[in-house]
Image (tube, rainbow, N blue to C red; front, top):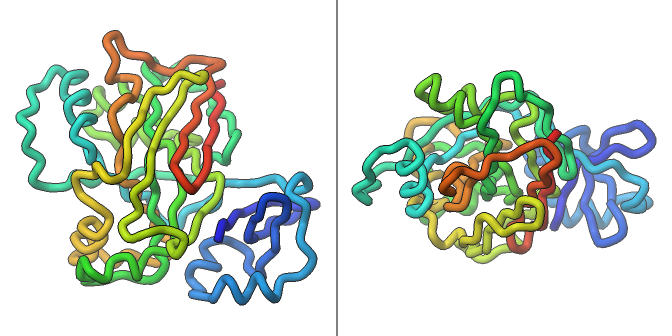
Length: 281
């Protein structure tokens, strides 16, 4: 099932989407739907008249996350190599523990959204295509073999990053948390639509040029590991978003770097979810 948040005739809705129609569901927000634990197929069967897709303004599936997004850093080996090269550090290939950080999001940018202009403080704007995992029910002390039972679904996230701010402040929070730095969408696809674990191609394009081209099979730390490890010490509340890290091919990984500039178009593509497009102002 593909789920979206959208506006129709000035009112915000949550709905299930097909190729041509959206079936409104009786919730004010995607977070409310997730927390409810409702049977979505039954809700769709009881839905009223569908809304034509062209009559809806599609928002990010979770426009306002309940909490900061949990992100994995350096969760693909080749991205670890390019990151170390950019920072002029050595990389020995050893990655025994996952790297976690958080990303502040006041409001997620929707598919086909326009990234605000931050040229006064950002001189190295970068993109990172990532699979985002949406937690479906409160998770605490989850064993690895039960982890997927706590997944509501998946979406695409572009972890926009200001590399100069990351470097200047010696950590990632500010450089990844500017307003608009979290494009998300175009939809959430529910977990039951995927194999366990989901093995999906993940790609990004800038102005049509293929930049990232990998697969979620190459995660260093997979989804069960992440959910199980985090839940040993943190209650992952329903609606929690976990971004699983980006593969190699980001702008800073090229020599010389290929950072984003005004007028660029970034497309993040994940198999069986869709394409998330962002325009750079």
